[in-house]
Image (cartoon, rainbow, N blue to C red; front, side, top):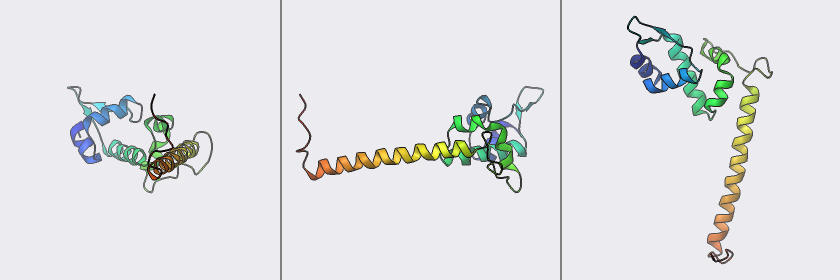
Length: 130
């Protein structure tokens, strides 16, 4: 199938498919005689996995670091990427992302507390600008 059809089947855009290929998340696809990309069910399944992982909060860099393991998640049934924990699995990437999310939640919680205190005190505890 052509790029537009593959993108629609995966719930994304042709531009996203080109970007995933450029970032190494998708293997370069076969080309027609006229140079158009040809996609099959495996590529569409891989794009769906990429989109799910991005929606869960992983970054493009996270996925690029483990792109060679993405096919494990396209199998039926999907393989667990952390089945054999180690530096080559998704486990370290996921744990690092969880730590980053926890740190951001702590930062936002502190910011909310300070802002709520500011509102409760009518701004009296904030020095006037000079």
